[in-house]
Amino acid sequence: MADVNIPQNIFWLIIVVIAVITIIIIVMQWRRVRESQSNVEFLQKQAELKKIELVEKDLEAKRMMENVLPLPQEQQEKLAQIRGETSKLMHKAGFMHSEINERVTRLEARTEYEKLQKLLTEIEKKEKELEKKGSKGGL
Image (cartoon, rainbow, N blue to C red; front, side, top):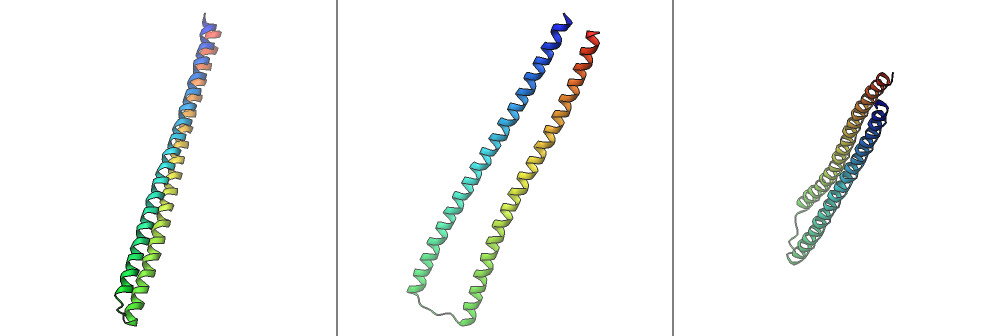
């Protein structure tokens, strides 16, 4: 009677391991889909902002053409400097945003790996316990 229970326990252990692995794969794929969706939404919003920016620039250019009031050279240079610095800051902000996203992704992957390692250790302990119980019951 004890010989029948051991294979059943091993069978259930294998089923549980397969189920855990399947759940982990599903969660990882779901997370990737979520990240892709958020990236697509982010890119759509960026495209919208770019369109708005282009329209604003066009309207500003039309207004400037209508109101031809030449600025003094000093003010033109300051304006050009401000525009250049603003552009640099926008590029830096975009770079920082991508850097943060990359680090968050790495941190999530590391955390998931550590969880999987812990789960694997627990499964190995359970296997050893089952083997000990099996060897004691079989003797």
